[in-house]
Image (cartoon, rainbow over all chains, first blue to last red; front, side):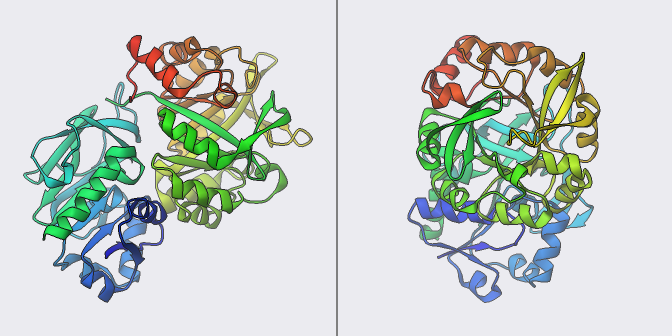
Length: 199
Length: 255
């Protein structure tokens, strides 16, 4: 069973629906025990970083999420929350990955929010992108981006290059919304479930 | 680089897709779920589900069809109509909606924009603006979903576009009322004027009929996305045809 962390203010419904379409057992949960014992965890997110972090704290989930033994996939804001800190609301996040999430710079041809379909270039081979062609289109909606680092798995361009996917051990994050990225997005979610099966 | 987006808009009235002409009179076109599935297969980049009566009737979007769409769709969609509070918005987002669009309630109480942005983030707050030229100036309208209640808001469109961005709007859908349902092509003059003051994504709406209209709106007004309803609903064009034409003319689209 995959536990989708119920952060209350997020697009939690759409991630659950995406797993349901794939026939994968995934359930919303805000129960620390259930999340700890799940085969894998998805941390979804539409919303603001400070708002989501205060919900995570209010539900007593920060400690659980920081000490997960099983693989975790952060989606959009959920990926950003894996880092130490976010400039959005100047809030401390989970600190599972190092660095600060910063606002995307706007410029000619790079309006912020970065909203729409963009190509994703896979820079490090990963089971998460199995069967997905390089430079495939994924759907993004965000104004902040994670820092580049050794954990960068895939990049996208919007004015500048930024991490579209990150991984370190069993910790995965995608800045785009696989649950809203058509067939390639569905493949990615299936790949995450496959990672859980093999680990 | 981002692709330009093609967005079919489903005007929904009581769970049915309808199409009005110049916001006057509505024709029943079919069930929401059938249309959503069709456009997803055609390669639509996104859908807007617009409860056209909700704003005027003072009720929130009917959740049953929102839930159905969320279960079915693996592309993003935005729900518009009758969202008046953070709690309304939270409920709609909880059904699996990616973005919420507000129009009349923002004109009545602009502070709602700030509240929504603070609760959910800028990126899921879309502001719809219904606008037309009156005596040489673009003006913004309220309650355009209902013939009887449509009225001018007292605000110039340019000033309103600036204000909603200052309040944190993440995207703007500019519906050019004089063009809506006419098939005369997008209102390039109005969209260019809007583009000059809009630095967040701008979605053009109203008047699409031919593939050339889509090429022009991207090349001549620099809109980020083009929204259309009747031309797709009546089957005069498919999203795929529009995208093929655009790709052949150097406009970046997802195919």
